[in-house]
Image 1 (cartoon, one colour):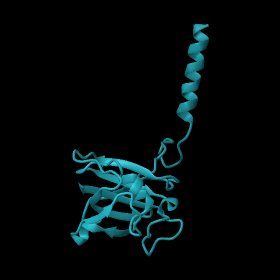
Image 2 (tube, helix red, strand yellow; image 1 turned 120 degrees about the horizontal axis):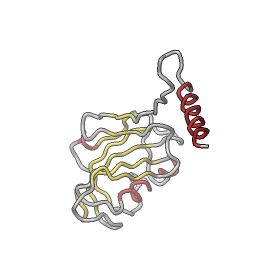
Image 3 (cartoon, one colour; image 1 turned 180 degrees about the vertical axis):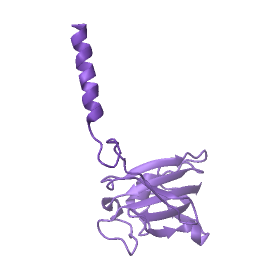
Image 4 (cartoon, helix red, strand yellow; image 1 turned 180 degrees about the horizontal axis):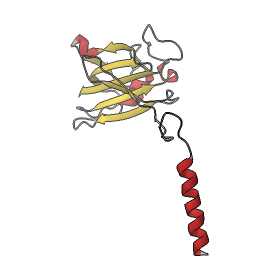
Length: 162
């Protein structure tokens, strides 16, 4: 019984060893798609995940802040940069050397619902990445180059919350 089990395992190992691999000597190793990093010159680089764009809003803390928490009704000051899913940049407050101010949760043609939802709860001193699918851009004014199916990727630093 034990010999039969050992023989079965050995057979599987031989079969597995012979699987995959092409003429290129790759031995069947899969290459995972890698994220793309966009360096804008001013501000932090923006990493775009590999694969297709998400269908829902993605909020990712890149650096947790230690200051005040951003709450609806607070006036916020932020630095930000944004790129399309394909990596083309469309906005960058670091290049303008002027942070942007807005009231969190207050309707504003310059602010998309993704920002209101994605920045809420962030702490001053923090940095967040927001990946905003088309459905999350309805209230705000998308960049002039944006089409109805464009996914936008932002990196946002929260400078102050009052």
